[in-house]
Image (cartoon, rainbow, N blue to C red; front, side, top):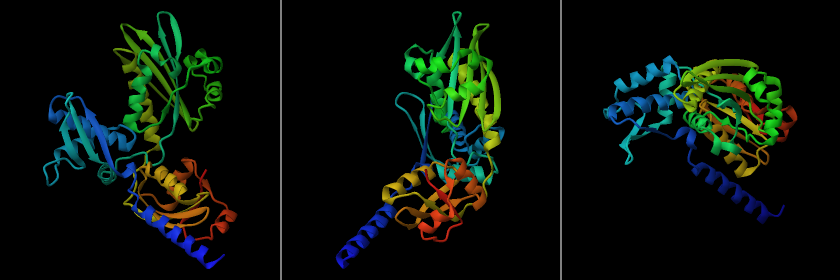
Length: 349
């Protein structure tokens, strides 16, 4: 390679690394915004702090509620609860609260409150609603005719940072996802029908009238484990939300763990090309509560090493990352990467 070309390549690499260093940390370590409709400031703070902790932990529990009460009663030096950055009244009523996500994560860890530290599993919702003697499969293609169940579940998904998926409810879904299987909790054919959406698990939801209210029955299936919940509500959206939230909490209790004091671990990734590949990988890692910060260590043609600040040891971190879809990198892939030092090597797909 001519000397001029080598110089240009070196300059381009230097500029890429410099731009990477300037990139801000992604949303996983940033500000978490919670809205409250409470009229009183104190009630809004109690509601908002609890909601923020649930969102970071990935589940609601007695331990989460106790920590919310403790943080509210123990203000910091500025006479504000820990992690609260700003609280302001909204023009339309209620309050908007901003929390420091890293501080919330630290509070959960210091209080030994279990949290979901890896990627939140994507769950496809097969929902059947009974009304006026009919059973209807709910889907986004007919959301205009829906009673509001899917909208309520979409709100719940945002509050938990839990990726709930909703089927189209089109002709293919209606042909392959039989209503009798959803109501009867026959999961095998429903997993087959869900393949077009690629979920990690399923939620089967059955809603029916019950003495002037709506009763919801939920079955969540993830990693060959089943979590059941029932709830009633004044209407179908309220009942669906309560039953689904209870099932998510039961799954979350199995997935959650208490991380240790965070340390830096170097991890190698193969199958990552250039600056755009690094940026996409970092955004993916920043979405995990197990990882507080991501720093570039080395960058190659099709591989890189990152320094990850995490409360997990290398083995536990590897398990979390493989659960999130990364693969164990083989010896040949590590050889091609030049074998820089790393606690573990993973492939990106």
